[in-house]
Amino acid sequence: MALRSVVYKAQLQLSDLDRGHFGEYNLTLAKHPSETEERLMIRLLAFALNATDTLQFGKGLSNEEDAAIWEINPTGEIDLWIDVGLPDETRVKKACSRSNQTIVLTYGRTSDLWWKNGEAVYKKLKNLKVLKISTEHSDTLAKLADRNMKLSWTIQEGLIYLGESEITVQQVWPAAE
View (tube, rainbow, N blue to C red):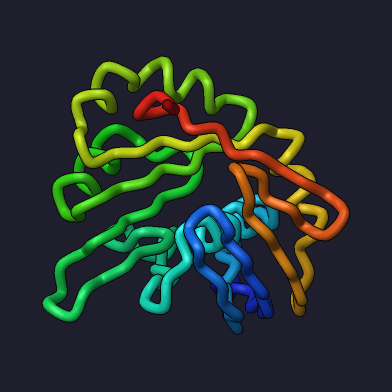
């Protein structure tokens, strides 16, 4: 018998002062059987960093043709493709060719090696942005995971405030100004 996804619900109150975006989101996230709570929370963070009224979770691990998160405009064109983790070069190139903008949010102990091995290819992709979250900060996020979450996050000057904790996300490519 195949394992089923586990459903997580998140009530996210978001105040993104950097983008001037404020919203309340009632989100349902399906945690794939092979997915960790850490990755689930990184997906939630990626959503928060890019939240709009039309941003949505894709099937991600369940369907290789979908992004982890994406924004599709009314014409069916993909405006934004977001992947989390360490996608292979082929997937990143495909995402860049299918979307107007692609963001990869990396995390984990091997994220620096992932960047180093693919840097030459990734720097040629003009619509790619690569962000990195430290292991310490991804661990902080993972501890917040709960099947029914009520979260209030504030983003200001590049810092993400999660109640009493704060985390940062480093922009790897293009190089931060």
